[in-house]
Image (tube, rainbow, N blue to C red; front, side):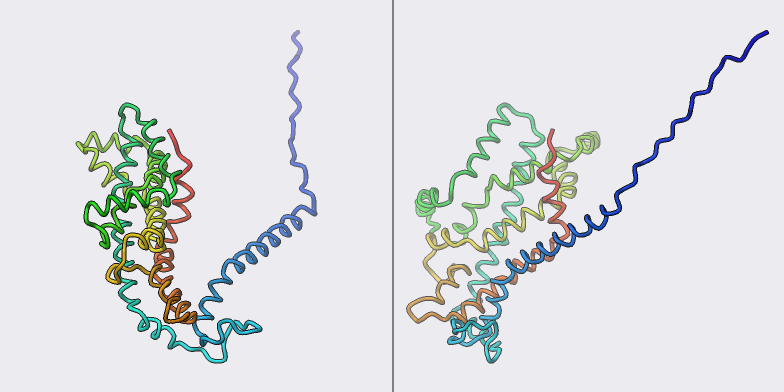
Length: 298
């Protein structure tokens, strides 16, 4: 006679501990506080821009009125046309637009090629050369403007557009930004392209560049704004209105003919339009590009 000696294991039921009732209101309160603080910080950064636009619509005597007023007695939209006629500001805008667009395009091309070389090609002392290349970021612009001016003088490029564009079109920052993004792209895509007979140039242009569009957008915005706001180098290398850029043109509103602050504010407001438009057009790529460009690595 056999006896059933099998025993059943008791079932263990795991239950989650109930969330405290006051945790949800506390989380909601923190979110509200953070949103209020971010709004205040955003308004703090916007105040100089709002004051600039408001001052561009005032008369000369109302810009520094006491007590200060945000808006004048009358909105003088004619200050914008007067600012354009006071100096050849339209020519300054075209000069800067040409320099910024050409410099940005050249920077994108050179940075893409050098970033691909440091990310994908295997050669001796690659990492050491890359670190040496990054070391140039620690050299301030003020240190290199004198030797750069002497080189431009020997080439006969003083007071020319190529002198405004080419010296800063080969940047280690762009190379580093794109290299970090290229390292996040799977190698399997390149191996598939090599099986189809693609070379390095076709892999770069047909495989890497379309995937890295967010990183290129970030680099394009930073480079365009850098060229657009450059003041020291154009001040040194140019001395003619035919090549004067916007930052130098804005400085001319405060000269021997008087200080036309309302016209300066109007011209500064106009000069912001291209950069704001560029950021708005590439806005959807910027967050993704900044988030992904520095995270990957092999």
